[in-house]
Image (cartoon, rainbow, N blue to C red):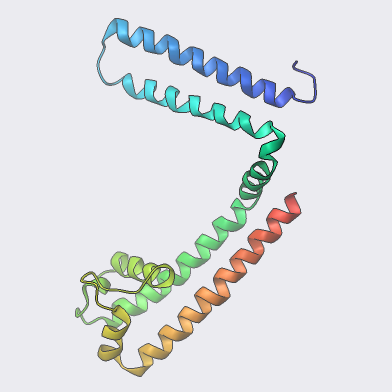
Length: 178
C-alpha cells in the first residue's frame, strides 16, 4: 500500500482522510462548546481542505489530458510569474508618462494607480473611459498625433509582441516538462 507504484496517491488519500477526521472532530467540538466565531474560521479552512480530495480523480485514465494540463500549468508558473512582472514594469513606465501628460483633464490618469489600471485595461480588454466613451479618441484630441503613434506602437508591441512571446515561452516550458 505504501510502497507500491501508487504510493503517492495512497499517501494523498490518507492525508485527505486525516483532514476529514479532523474536520469531523472540530465540528463536534464546536457544536458542543459554542465558543463563538473565532474557531469557526478554522472549521471553514478544514472544510475547504476537503475539496482537495477532488485531485484524486486525476489518476484515472479518462482524465489523462486534464492531468497533463494541470501539470503543464504548474511547470509554467515560473515563466508566467516573470511575464507578469515584465508586463507590470511596462505598464508602470507607461503610466508614469501618462500621468505626467495628463494635466488633470482625464480622471483615468490622475494618479499612478488608476493610470496603471487604465493602461492594463487598454492592453487587455478595451480602452474606454468610466463613462463609456472611447479613451483613445479623447486622448487623441487632447494630445494630438504623438499620442496616436505612441498608442499604436505600444499596442502592437504588447498585444502582438509581448503576449505572443509569453505564450511561446509558456508553451516551451510546458512541452519540456512533459
